[in-house]
Image (tube, rainbow, N blue to C red; front, side, top):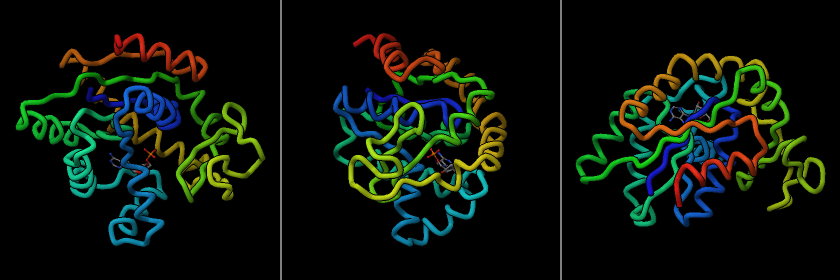
Length: 214
Ligand code: AMP
């Protein structure tokens, strides 16, 4: 099953993507995580991506598309995957579509986790991330067992630069301008399913599972 998660930054699509990937035993692929791993390792790609990410801007399509296509060509993706944060522009979606078409394949579902803007800024200021292992928490909704410490690896939790309020406003604008048109794009292909992302994490997950019909 090949699934795309759509939704504004902070809509909770990353959390849901991980839960879906676990349930269906397919990889969770986050382009944001791939960029962050590259930043941490000081690669050239990481240094280039960071310039954009720190301002809440999108990393250029040329860089993003290549890393995504390389990733989905790997062996563990042959039974499907959950894409989280890709595509984020119409050209990215078109490249993915074409690459799949060449393999006689297609996206099964694009799930839009719908959350109004008013909720987003508030939510994101509560987000905490572990830069060591990539785990994410929320001070209100998914608190770590010990404040400021990652449950999974014991390292320090931080508010990511791109989750800071000024950056979030930029990311929301970028989302509306460049990513939201994908809702219509996948709607036109008959694979769009919308779930109410303002509900609890479990309720959102249950509605996604219901939509996937498995
Ligand atoms: P995320 O963790 O998905 O919220 O992504 C964090 C940041 O990484 C975004 O704000 C972008 O700067 C960059 N990024 C992640 N995925 C993409 C993508 N598909 N296209 C362009 N930039 C991306």
